[in-house]
Image (tube, rainbow, N blue to C red; front, top):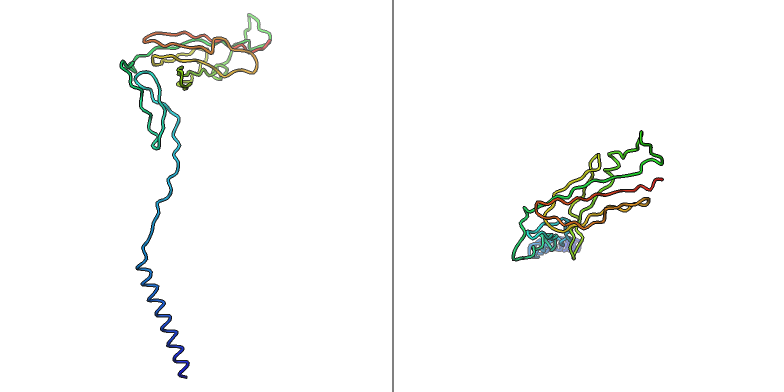
Length: 185
């Protein structure tokens, strides 16, 4: 019986000692935390118009715009000109009669987008997309500068009038006429 009491006493001492040890250990261990790793940031591809007429894009860890170039005589942003023109599309029918012509629909004009790019030596940044109206007319006001106009190529037929380099001057109007030959014969 003395053995049983001795074993019971030892078990109680071991359990109590383990509890004291775990409580002591838990309060003395430092708690370490880690910050989650930073995820890469994707910058949008928009551009900022600088006072000299050039464009800069976003860059760096905070997606801030790059600094505009410093020039001695900046061109004010308020200087603008107009690009306007007319688009023709045809032929629409294999045989057209004078008394019953096949005319392009507004949807046909709307599907022929005109893309305006900033024309400089460093990049071809798209600055505008023009959709002709229901009769094929289009117009846009642009800051002073050099641009190029283009359209998506066609698998059948051809396009004349573009690609074209355009120089917009303050208060000026540039006329650009485009002919879309559908290839229907």
